[in-house]
Image (cartoon, rainbow, N blue to C red; front, side, top):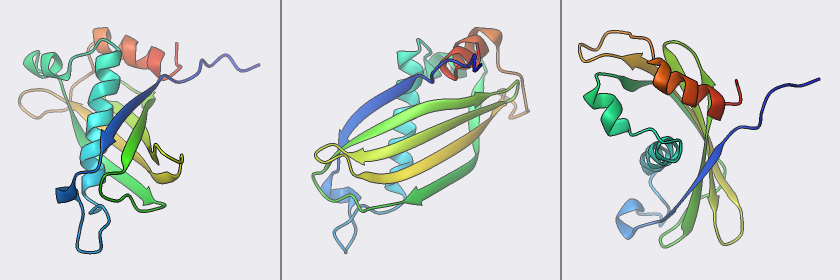
Length: 143
């Protein structure tokens, strides 16, 4: 029997701006990472966690690994949906996953993951405070 709970999924909508495209008329690859950050912050907000407040309390989650698989190009004026999930949480690590889809037809444009290490104001590895860890574990289906 599987006791894990379904993962919380946040959906964030955005529209491709002209400045985000390249000479070929498609979105420049690095812009996807900006959109994943938007999705990550919105997921946290939906969970009742303010990343600004976390930082003010001396708890930051720094990116240590990023992976992205591009499936289909996004183009100027496409409406996109960033689906973000918290995949795993450990004492000093937080792992997110993302899907980027075109809203009009559901085409999967990219799949990605980011891994973050928890650090303090001195940039030293730290433990995720329980007030955040508990929220994140529940969102990841771990409680």
